[in-house]
Amino acid sequence: MTERRERGTRPVIRLTVVRTERLTPHMIRVVAGGEGLSSFTPNEFTDSYVKVLFRVPGVSYPEPLDMQTIRAELPADQWPRMRTYTVRYHDAAAGELAIDFVYHGDQGLAGPWAARLEPGDEVLLLGPGGAYAPRRDADWHLVVGDESALPAIAAAMEAMPDGAPVLGVLLVEDASEEQPLATKGDAHIRWLHRAEGGDLGAAVRELNFPEGTAHAFVHGEAGAVKELRRHLLGERGLTKDQLSISGYWRQGRDDEAWREEKSTFMA
Image 1 (cartoon, helix red, strand yellow):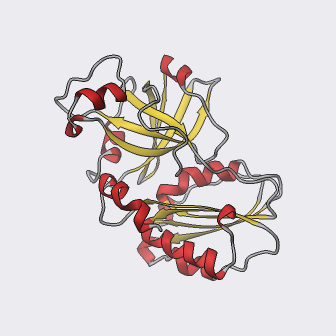
Image 2: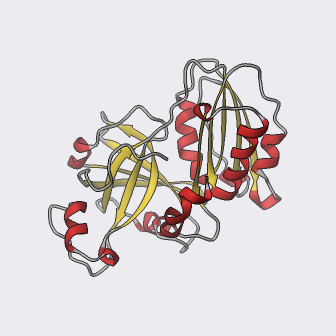
Image 3: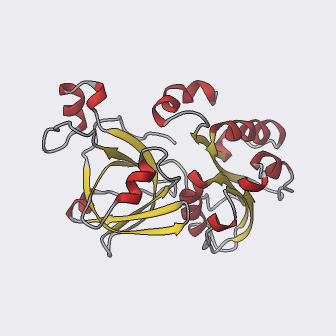
């Protein structure tokens, strides 16, 4: 994902939880709103994303909450933790903004937090950013990813032009994690299951690509994405401007460690 503004220059958006929804056994939707939603400015991207801020327990922060002030006045270990998430939808009329969180029990930071949320709880955001939306002038579209990319892919599917050919390969844990994908495109989606050894790289290599100019969105675990990047650019002949591709996470790394090495790993 591409940052469109310098980090730390955006105001913190303070929302409150309206409700949470368990979409699948491992996907939780957090719907937030409140007066702070008026300061959220949506963009044109289907991979529109925000930084969710998590206060460090026991740390007192200046009010109003401002990341530039925090970085200037507090040591780094007291800065709020940040995690990047796609805005699943923003409904100004309803006063709602939804974010979907992958949940694997007590593992990680954001998933357990989302599971504990109740109406009225605080949600702190920075953003949004973004870089991708399906091109209307493309002859066909490719969407590939795992659970981490599913919210952005679902938003992209909703934005596909009428009748646009779409090939999709999606990796989730098992059949219980599959979600309906609404679209006006002519979509052919293959669901892979991790529990059965599903392999994104192998599945994409098996695809018969249509004729014409493609526009592709490929995101997920960094190792799989790096392999797909080589395949799509080197073997399938896609150009960089046809491809939105990034490792959202890396196996065996927490978010902080992955951010430190992402630029060199994906090169």
